[in-house]
Image (cartoon, rainbow over all chains, first blue to last red):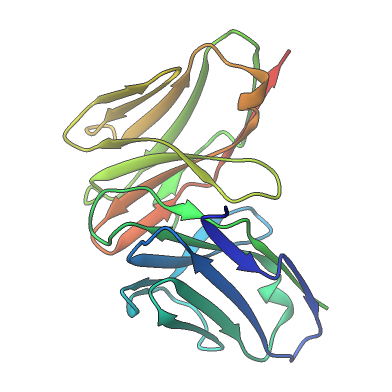
Length: 114
Length: 110
């Protein structure tokens, strides 16, 4: 029974397209995150939502728009895809923001932009 | 501006010996530190954590040490096992900040 799931696992698309990655957690957590792991393997936070409200928005192009329909879901929509968007994107969740607790990660979505 | 650094990109250790992974941070506002382990094609999984009010936390074969004055933490794995071979990330948490280190690939040789 997967705690944090992401779909799709692989995504190959052309430059200029718009794509979405979905994330769902069944842990009952309040906080969800999106991370990008680039070719240098750096894991950088992009967004964080707490109870459907945006609380972290790092310096990310506004082509990236997170959407949280409810606290169990945090989807990532990317417009006008560029070559530099190729990376592995991880979704994560934690019990509550501000408390000291670990994050639970999804398996990642490998995005390749051609 | 990498606020959390792991200066050793890789480390090889013989099975049964101690593995020591290091992590340095620059921001004194971080007050909680975590270690995650990552296998290929999987997301990171939590391993162990430490609050800034402590200098040591132990969980089985894993011990994390924190030296606040040096802004340095380390993860000790004793004894190391082949299944420990993975990439290890340290992470630092502060108010509205959650920063991961650059990762260290540990290989435990049988």
